Length: 496
Ligand code: IFM
Image (tube, rainbow, N blue to C red; front, side, top):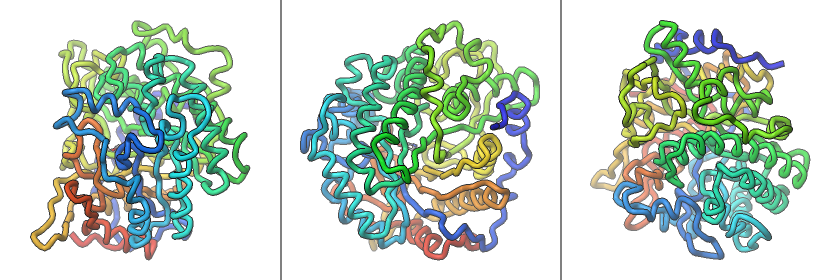
């Protein structure tokens, strides 16, 4: 039986000294398990471009990015980094860097332009060609079915707040599973459903840009249902050896003080950030207190008999995406308006029913996103799940940093800050493995610079620099450094 989530387990984790002292992480030559996957991750809308080719139709992100004022500079994914046409060269680059796995997502509207009905063969063929190219080069494909690009037609029909969207997702999952299950073994249903639900329907900083807290909570439940139904559809369509999981952007939530009010704020935000997904997915139940704390927003009447059973499918692995922790306190008279929660500027909160909780900037150095660098949080997160679901293999499916990278006059791109970031976070992963966590791989976000959603092309997360004028790819010094780690399976002393 997994350990239940209790307020005590939460608060002791949130206040663990390790989380406050990232510098305590050791930096010797650290050997990772022999079969550890060294990967990089991307997603379809962020890199593919070719948005009108081979039968693809608009997703919510096409509509959103083309709506004035929604993205920095009006940037869109129309061209992105042309991966749809350059995928062979991109895979060659991955091979050159010695990556042993590549995590990518499928664009739903390339496969089902209206989000329902028969598949478009040309769309599936693109992913088959990509996967074959990876396999030819000995790179393990890790496929994500949904990384935020809902078919616009399904949004027109109500989107994730509508139950039918979960059934549509299951149909799509079955189609892709049947088409690629013979060659892809690692399958992820959803990427960061928190962002889809709470940034998409709560604060509105992500597509489809709605600002309705009740819709956000309905969306969260239907995303959970989509995961469960999708996992079942995948398993019915694919060989048994394949492994099915989900990637959550589970958050490390800390309190500014140990007062009962601040610890209660941690508990409530933890329910909304983590428990609303991992409760049903990992334990078959919503966490204690969630319904009460959101009672003014919804009566949860959209949760139907049998849903939790359908959602609670066996998982073969859990993907953890980690960037930075959150710091909260009780604030009975918190002013309305943008919060320091790192999720973009909006007057609407992505945290339903939590208007009396304040978010604070966590202390320490930050990346270009304004996100505090805290590798101790990654260790903390991994250990939380290692304890909560013992025996469940874990992958770090995203971790990385944006910096204002610029080529030197000779064309090389040096990004020592990213090397330091990756080094510290890989050391944290190693420490978790040494502490008994079953971490099977690490995916750097991102393989190459790309469309960073509402921030457009202004934020560069890539290990590979992309010149957006010419589409030339140049591995940054961090890419070469990461290649060295992947080649040896060892993390050396940090050479700052
Ligand atoms: O670029 C995103 C990605 O699509 C999902 N996880 C966080 C990344 C950085 O913001």
